[in-house]
Image (cartoon, rainbow, N blue to C red; front, side):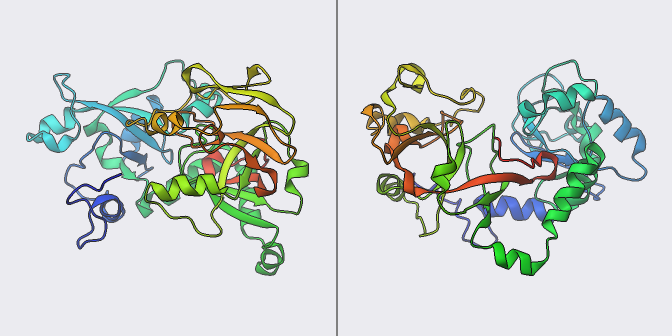
Length: 351
């Protein structure tokens, strides 16, 4: 958790994370110079006039305008792995670099790509020269229009309804503010079900817990044990901070054990929920350190006011395995829908 010298975001010009966002947001894709790429970057193709041939070629490779693609790996013209095209000095070599691209959230969009006629697996390789002139970053304002157009092309009925909901008159919004709110997913702990940056529409009507059952995704106020873990690692929580997890254990459930591969069994059976292997490991494996002294590794029985919650990404989720049981009165909301990004809108709370 130590900071690294020279990477503070609080400097001028900005460095670190803020500097990367500012650089991406101000970058112009209309420049005639070659656009540099780096591994891990998320790019968004644009449908540009005069580039129809190039766009058609990319669509044949299943690279479509308005969809976010992450650069997974990169190689030079001789097949050597590189991190960035900036490491290549020759402009011709830069254009020959191969980018391995994969759409963000692709595991949840299998049917979509099958409908497009894709029979191969991700990632696909595209030369930097073939895509340099027609892409921008996810942070650049130029990506907004392509994303919206792409979303409406795929499912105009769903997105028209989402737009109508978003334009609900202000008086109605003020009336509902105590019972409905928005929540932005802050981390990868619920991937691939909920991705970082997803925006949920959340209902917070009284007695939420009474409408909660096994497998439900809930929002809750952090118990003292979770607050202690967060603050001890140098972060801060406000009085309104909420966490999101999936309920896997209810009052009366017992024999809760942390077993091999950091999985959890309840009532001597695997915990309910999706496959928790479908997300990337956190490189430093910090979760292993937290689980060493986890308070939810061995519980005989849940009390009448306790529940057990897990994240969908066991490799990074700080959940009941770490902080123990959750008082049911801490549950304050349940998602009604996912309203952003537009290409992943879901008008139900069944996650």
